[in-house]
Amino acid sequence: MDAIAHVVRAFRDEAIPHSEGPIEPRRDIATLETELMLADHDVAQRRLERLELNIKKAKNKEDELELPVVRRCLEALEREKPMRELDLSEEDLRKIRGFAFLTAKPMLLIVNCDETDAPKMAGIIEQYGLHEIAARSRTALCAISAKVEEEIASLDAADAKVFLDDLGLKEPAKDRLIRAAFGLLGLIQFFTVGEDECKAWPIRRGTTAPRAAGTIHSDFEKGFIRAEVVSYDDLIAAGSIAAAREKARLRSEGRTYVVQDGDVINFRFNV
View (cartoon, rainbow, N blue to C red):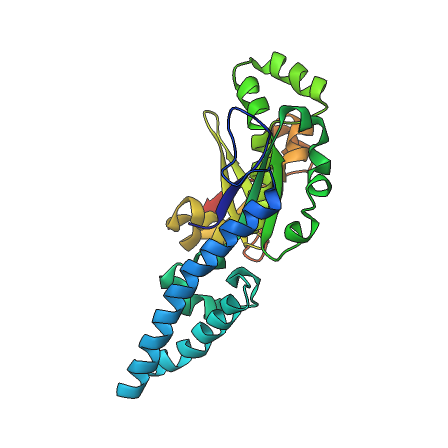
C-alpha cells in the first residue's frame, strides 16, 4: 500500500456509543498511532538483532549498510516518533522497504463529522484541536460527513448539487479526499483523450514526458518521439483538440518536458 487512511470518529450518536466514552478525535488518532508504532518496534527490534548476529557471523556489506538505518528507525520509535517523520533518503527507504513498516507510510486522517458540522468543514481542525497533528510530516487531514455523503449518493446530480449548496459545500467529499490523497502522495494526473474514451493517469509530480508515456505502455516510453500537450483549461476553453491546435494552444514537447497537473497529452512514438 502507498498510504494509510485512518477514519476518525467525530460524529455524536447515542445509539452508537464510543468504546472510550467521549468523542475525542485527538485521543483516537494517538491510540492508533501508538499501536502502529508498537507493531513497527517489534519488527525493527527483531531485525536489528538478526542483523547484529549476521554481522558477527560473517561480514556482509548489505547488512552493514542496513544496520544503521534500522537502528535509527528503532531509536525514533522508542522516542514515540513515527518513522514517516524521519528524513530518510530513497536509498534508506529501499533498504527497509521489505519490512512494510506501518509508520513509514504517509497518513491520511479522515475525520467523520456530524451532519450538522458539514457547513463548518473548514473549521474542523480548530474545533477539535488538530493543528499540530495536521502539520506533521507526510500527514494530511480531510473532514467529511459520511451521513451527508450517504444522502448525496441517493440523489441525482441536480438534486445533489442543490443539497450541497444548501449545506454551503462546493463539492462532495470524494473530490476532497482524492485531492488530499494525491497531495499527500505527491501525485498529479494527466489525461489521454480519444473519440470513445477519456482516461486519467496518476503520476509522480516532476515526471518527464517519456516516463509519463511509460505509465500507459512501456513501448510508449521506449519509442518516445514527442508529446502533443494542451492544458485542461485551454482544451475546455477551445472546445476540442482541433480548435486548440488552431488557436496555438496545442504544443509539441520533447523528452525533458515535465508533465503538469491536468495536461491532456497525445504521445508520438515509434518502436
